[in-house]
Amino acid sequence: MRIVLVGPPGAGKGTQAAILSEKLGVPHISTGDLFRANIGEGTPLGIEAKSYIDAGNLVPDDVTVRMVESRLAEDDAKPGFLLDGFPRTTAQADELARILADLGVELDAVVQFDVSEDVVVERMLARGRADDNEEVIRNRMQVYAKETAPLLDYYSDKIVKIAAEGTVEDINERTMAALGK
Ligand code: ADP
Image 1 (tube, rainbow, N blue to C red):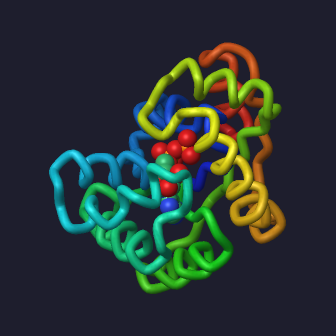
Image 2 (cartoon, rainbow, N blue to C red):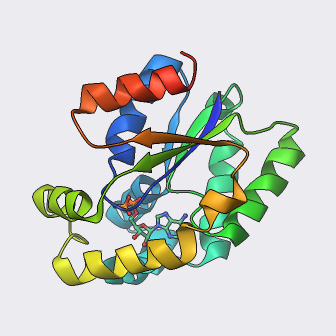
């Protein structure tokens, strides 16, 4: 299956993606994880991305799209993938459409994790990642509302909406059921 996961920061996309990836047998491709790996290794891409991530802003589309395009070209992504954190803007969604058309494949579903703002702030503060302080979190929420939420309309014909509050297991079961698995 070819799936995109959408939801505000702290919605639990990464947690759910790890479980779904195993159950569905497709790789979990997280742009946040790819950026953090590049930052950890000190690559030019990581050095460029770091200042944006630390401020809670989006990394520029050209850098992000190139990174995703090369990841999707790898062999393990041929049978399917779970994209977590990409696209995050309608411009990125247009780029994804182009990449998939070039590969001759289509998305099966866009899974939306629906969760209240109180819960996401609580989860992020508990997780304590470097970009999880209150000011940066607030900026990421604003960026989500302005840049990413329009994807819900963009993908209206493919959206599968999941109530994403509750236990990790419950949310996973709801998602599998909604995907017909
Ligand atoms: P979260 O789900 O909590 O927002 P992520 O790990 O998905 O965390 O993303 C962390 C940061 O990486 C984002 O705040 C942003 O700076 C950058 N990032 C991730 N995906 C993208 C993307 N598709 N476009 C631009 N920047 C991105």
